[in-house]
Length: 78
Image 1 (cartoon, rainbow, N blue to C red):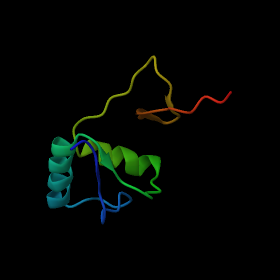
Image 2: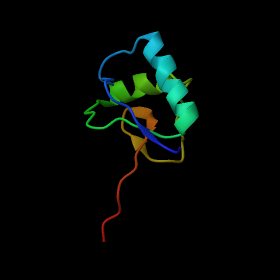
Image 3: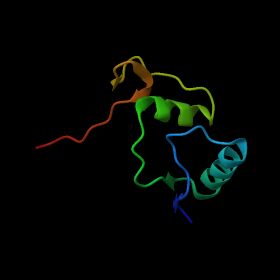
């Protein structure tokens, strides 16, 4: 099955190693995970990403100011 929703995980807080292992296992199994209604900061986003390895920026791609690890994606309006 492609995609799964994760509940009961607050991405604003550091995660226990057991939780990271469960999230990683879910990602490996489902390829896409949804964390609904998570109002996380850029720092939270970077911390969560680092659970999965080193992060790197892209010098030719727009990033969030001050956070070269976060790709700036926005919807194009007509």
